[in-house]
Structure formats: structure tokens, C-alpha cells
Length: 234
Image (cartoon, rainbow, N blue to C red; front, side, top):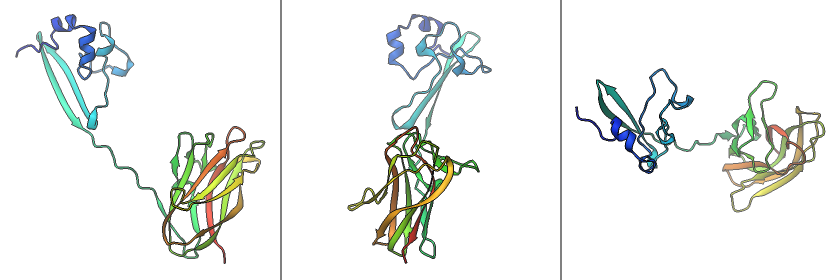
């Protein structure tokens, strides 16, 4: 088998730093199979020769390795096409037979970096609401239109109340409806208390979106929200 000039010992010793940078997808591997490449390079490897992964156009990954056997260097290369998964479809909550719409925290779509669903039994809430940019959204389907009381099951730690929040119906629609409310101190972030903060009117059947977002965080965190309930006004 002929030598591959890219990976012969002579070529590897004479390639310049500039040449290595121009070939970022090719690496000379000097690790044994028992080593974890992320632990660090072995002696003699330059930074551009450390094992790595590179995100390439169209999510094509190029993987290569050099094998030395009896003084002969062979080059093997594999191309792996990785499809990027389609955007996750949000959960669509169905309206109950009595007209109530229950929006649980676990069904929310998170928009942001810190806000998250906390699944522990004693919590089961949206928490870590420490950034005003973070929002929670629910998608729900309405069969019976009308006017609804908006009830928020909210908790907030002692001395942490006072944040300004908004609940907005169809925020990206032509005529969004926004209800502002001020977070109340409930004595603990998992000490939940139901609060009716206002009313919204849904005039059209079909899918709608409800978004909750802080406008101003007064202290360390805005609040925890376990659920929002839309209760039809009789």
C-alpha cells in the first residue's frame, strides 16, 4: 500500500501551522483506543491536530483516522449525514367539556435560557424565572368561545414579591389581549396560591396561544407558576 503524503511521518513533521489551519477537517490521531480524546493531547500533537468535531454545512460530519501497521500509514475517512430534527410541535391543550382550559406548567413551551420545568413532586412548577426575557407559552384549542377568568397558581419566596408580569392572549396575532399583574409574596416559591388576575374574551374557535412573561423582576426571581386556568364566565 502506498503512503499517504498527508499522514506520513515525514509530511507530518514538515507541514506548517498555516497548512494545518487550511485543512481543519483532517487530524493525525496519536491516541490509543483506551484513551478518551477529550482528556487532552499526547506529547507531540499540535493544537490543530487534537481530536475534535466540527460542525459543517448541511450537518455533514467528516471523520478520519490514520492507521500505522508495519511502517505503512493508511488513511480512512467516513462521511456521516446527520439530519437536524424538525422543530418540536408544541403540546395543544384541549378544552374541557365544561369549557375550562387547564394549562399545566409541564405543557408549556419555554422561551429563554433560565426558565425551566421543575418536575420534582414537591415542586411541579415553572421555576428559575430570573430573566425578564424568559417566557412560557401554551397552545390550546377552543371549541366553546366566550369570556374567561384567568386564574394563576403562583408562588413567591418571602421578600421576593413585587415583580411585574403579563399574561397575553395571542401575542403574535393582530389584536393581542394583555393582562398585567404584580407577583404576591406567598411565603415560599412552592407555597402556591390561586389568583384571578383578570378576564379575556376568545371570539374564535381554533388554536390560540397564551404567553406569560415578566416585565420587571423586583428581586432575585419573579415567581413560580404551577398552572394557569381559564374558567368560563357564566
